[in-house]
Length: 154
Image (cartoon, rainbow, N blue to C red; front, side, top):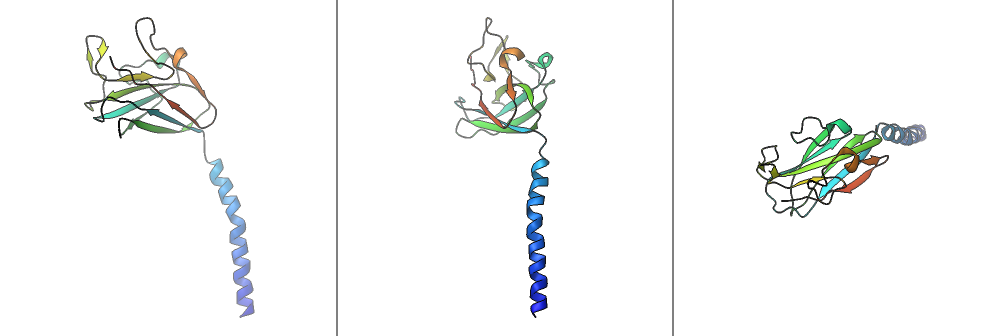
C-alpha cells in the first residue's frame, strides 16, 4: 500500500513540475500583440461596424475595402461596438471604420458625401482641408493596445 502511495506521489510531483513548462510554451506561442478598437456614440444600433486595419501607406484610405491588412465586423450594442485584432506584429498601423447601417459592406454615399458614419484613427473630423492619410492616422503597436475611434456623420 505504501509503495502505491509513493508511486502516486511521484507521479503527481512529476505532473506538477510540467505545468510551468506547459505555461511557458503556451505563452511563447503568441506571435504579436492584440489591438482593441472601439467606437461609441453611433447614431443607431442598426447594422454592424466594419473595422479595417492597415499597415501600408499606399493602402490607406481604402474606400472599397480591398487593400486592408485585416478586417473585422463588430456587433453593435447600445450604440457602441468593438473588435480585437490578434497577433499584430510590431509596427505602424491605421484604422478605418464604417457604421454599415444597411449591412451591404460598402460606404453608402450621396454624391461624394458619406451617408453612413465613418471614422479614422487619430481623426476627430474630416473635410477638404483635413483629408485622411496613413501618415496622419498612423499609430505604433509595440505591445497590447486599445484605441477609440470617433465616428463622424455628415
